[in-house]
Amino acid sequence: HYIVMELLDGHRTLRDILSERGSLPPVEVVRIGRELLAGLAVVHDRGLVHCDVKAANVMLGPGPAKLIDFGIAEPPHDALEGATSLGTLQAMSPEQLHGEALTPASDLFSLGTVLYEALTGRPPYPGATPEEVSASHAAGEVAPPSSIVVSIPDRLDGAILQALRRDPGSRFHTAAAMSRALESAS
Image (cartoon, rainbow, N blue to C red):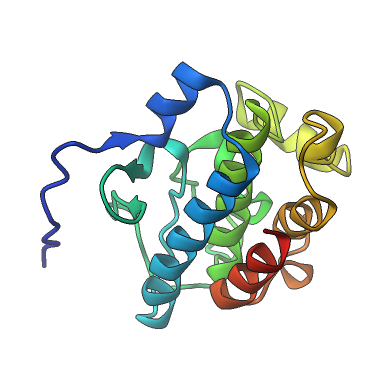
C-alpha cells in the first residue's frame, strides 16, 4: 500500500506561517477550515480517521489548503486495551490522548485546535506533557477565541468551541456539518 500526492512546490506549512505572523484573520481561517473539511470529508467517507490533523500537516500555497501526512491514519475503532496514542500532543482529542475510541469527531476536534490557534496565535489546550494537556482538557471550557482576539465573530467562536467539546457526541458529527457552521460564520 502507498499514497501518491501531488508535488506541493511553492507551498508552506500553516505552522511556518503562524510562526511568522502569529495569527490569521477570521476570513482566512474560515477559508482554510472549509478547504480542510472538504478533504476530511473524503477521508472519513473512505472509512479512515487521519489521527494527526495539526498546523504542521496543513500546506498552504496556490490552490486550496492541503492536509498531508496520512502515516498514522486508520479506520475508526473502539478503545483498544493497552493502546498508546500516536499523534501530536496539543492537537489530540481527549479520546485519542487516552487511547479510547477514535471517530471522525476526533479529527474534527484536532481541526478545531488548528483553527483556534490560527485565530488566536496560541493552542486551546496548553501543556508540554500528556498529563498537562489532559489536565487542560479536564479543567473545563476553553476560552472563546474572541476573548483573545476581539474581531472574531460570535458564530465563528461557536463553531470552534463546538469542535473542541470534550464529549465526541456533542461535537460536529460530520465534516460537512462543521463546514456549514464555518460558512455561516463568515
